[in-house]
Length: 396
Image 1 (cartoon, rainbow, N blue to C red):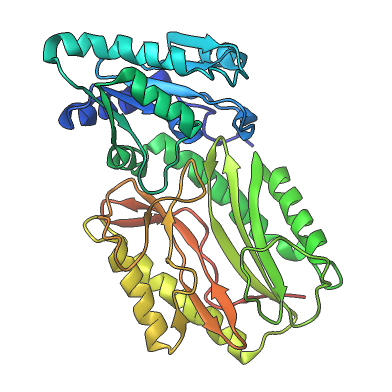
Image 2 (image 1 turned 90 degrees about the vertical axis):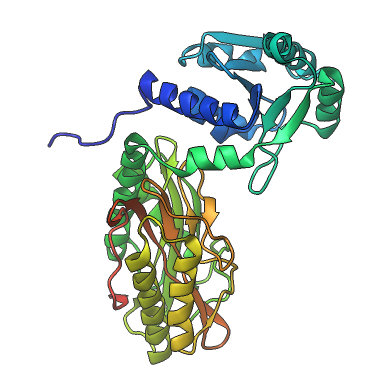
């Protein structure tokens, strides 16, 4: 059978489009440069993809000028891999070097970029840097303070909204990768009864599921949480040595990866039989998800989705919002902007990939969560996860 998997990586044209859009937004905001130093952003703009980011020792920087291609300022250990991307200008220092962990080279490169515009504009220029919600600065704070002093009178300004608007809208090539991992995980969920059974420990069940996802084509399964029991109040825990019994529920929630892009959805099942309370909780969560999916079209907001789910939970007299939000964006990270909350108010646009994830409290303080993944299309949604059944599945 022909492999219908999307191509690995992206063509240069994809990065050119991303850069063009970023520089357009930079111009609109009066920015002369843009600095990123976190893995998703560097990868988004260059294609540089390595697990070496898991080491916290070395910082990595990418400077985007207002015109021209990005400039990488990175530890020398990454030079060969970075030169295999579409970039032309890769500057390196020997790292680790706590005395000067790339700050001098970074400041000199920034100053070189800014000098081009200071001759025209003069005075203090602005450098975009994402430092707002759901961002972080991946360099020592003392080094950042030194960098600010070095480039003065030029200043850094928060540019989180630029980054958010860029990454929230996925290209068709990105959507293909997310769709691929959603199909892999959906297949894995459909086969659970083949490799998970009564008498196994939670740890054995989780291991079997992870192995099957890798066999089906997932590159990584970095996020896998859940629980077993008559119900569960902790839905983000690691598996234990608890032995699965008849009548138990089981919930797997996974953020698995294909070519650098995540899915994020869960499934609830029961072993041999289910109590009426558990069945009712499952159906309420499923109905809440259905209500949100029907509203997920361009022009509506994430808060509209939240309200649709909350209304179902309130109608069914279920306690809701025990985990703070009812879904979020997904893509290069397992959770991204926006969040489905009462006050987020992000407007849905074509190309956004999101989850809907209502949760409710039932029984003896137990939590029931249900989640689906979808992409916003011009007239509604395209489900990427294969829709869960409206009635909970039993495992015999």
